[in-house]
Amino acid sequence: MNINDVAREAKVSKTTVSRVLLGSDKVKTETREKVLEVIRKLNYTPNTSAQMLAKKSNKVIGVINTLPISDPFFAYMNDRIAYECEKYGYGTLYVVCGSKSLEGCDREIGLLYGKVDAYILTGNNRQGVRQENVAKLVSIGMPVALFKTGITQDGAITVDIDNRKSGELGADFLYQKGYRRIGYLHGDGAENGIRDFKEGQERYLGFQQKLQTYGLPLEREFYGNRSYKTAGSLADKILDAGIDALFCDTDMMAYGIISAFMEKGVKVPDRIAVLGFDDVKFTNYEPLIRLSTVAQPIDRMAACIVGALVNRIENQVPYGKVQLFDAKIVEGRTT
Image (cartoon, rainbow, N blue to C red):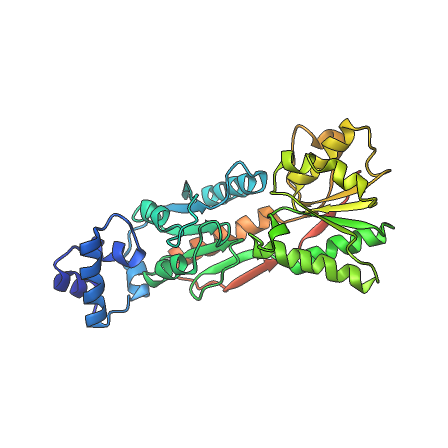
């Protein structure tokens, strides 16, 4: 039983069957239902190895971003992915998914289908990446890498940092520097109890629990949305809280809050220390501020993702299911 049998029974092309398996929106509803009925009737399961061997390479890797590419962290990650792809002679195609529907990024996957040899999905499942999206790609033998999605899937590689350990690292650093009244600036609207990022939740728990091992409570929590401007608007509230150090979910927010402090004449770290997260450089501020941050190894993660996908495409080399990297402290002048 193969895809030709399904196509013959459904009286459609092989391409149409593949698009149905992938969830592409280029297939009419009536045709999709007919193909799915035949698949169920024939009890068809895609032969992923055969599909991959027969597939003609486009030498292109598709990247679907479910967070704005204006986010400096993901912008830099995209740059590093393109750099690593070029080393192997591959191009990159980027699509931004803004959907929060139940279909997730099905439409964007369909846009790239037939044009790319592998997919990299970035972001999180509240912003567009769904488990079903990944399962469909794997089912047709497509190499898939997941970056910061909070999802794992047999047949796909998940790459991220160890967020729990990263949170612990940040808390330990601030404690060892002598800070005892420590606040936390969330970057994903967690005030309503719903966190957009599983990784953010893990990081927060690691941070909080590490402080507890030192007998310290997390003094205050503040809530932003990853943006520079929003962080800056919280400056007065943070200063009024009487804390001596602040951990920020992202470097972007750290720079925003420090800039607001500077406008008010507040000295960092004399009055309050600030620790960021990401290690993304901001050319407008970095020479002046030199932020202390918990650094994610973006270059190494990009190399891991692209290397694993190319090995799978060209050599059929299986990749590990989950690859977690360790973060490190980069100490600047803000702590």
